[in-house]
Image (cartoon, rainbow, N blue to C red; front, side, top):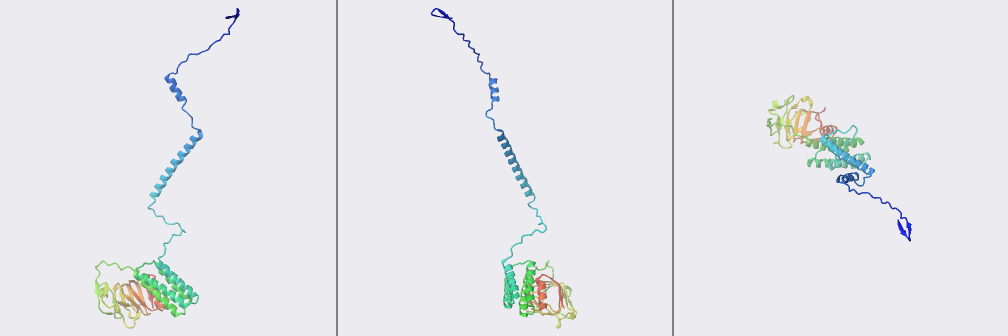
Length: 315
């Protein structure tokens, strides 16, 4: 109460509220930190991180599995599915040139241009000759295709003997090329060689084989290249019944007409065929040259050799 001019004045009562401050203990501070870890990561970010992690793990696992299967099947060679085309290697240039020349021959013959067809056929023969001298190789399909194309050229004008002769010479060249690709027969080195320096006459109704010859290899390499190895009877017909069997004949020259040849291999021999009777049974020609007639019989013999066949009978 206060006095103001003698009057009693009642002062307003002020009530002050206060509390005693108690500092937090160390434990309380630690719990506070645990309850307030900082700013929280949004839920969508967490989901995205989980997805990315799963994708990364899956990619690594798939890559390792693919490597495992590739390594396991690296050495395996699977056959192409039925009906699937297998890529073929490109033909050597000389084979393509031969095929193109023969195609030109077919086209020119079909157009009635006989001279141009002959020139195209001769060009193909020249390419094959060059390939033979260079030691080139060719698959069986090459010879089959070439023979078929020659047949087409001749079929257009079968009456034209000159065109047929050019085609026949090409067939003989193919036969020589095929002979150049033939492998030599296996020889243990124990086969006895019988060398001759002059032609040997074969009598009628006779058999020349290792027993009668005294060896398995008839070596005529010391004879002149044009000399006849075996001289059959003059008729050169099957009625003479001359047989040569189970021999290897090397060098010089041999006429095939009128004789029966069985299990015979000619090596480096020049073979003649004059259009008579001939009987070949399992006969091989290794690096041989041929002098055949260009008629139908000569064509049959040349085709047989060019196609890799070993047996033929012409009566």
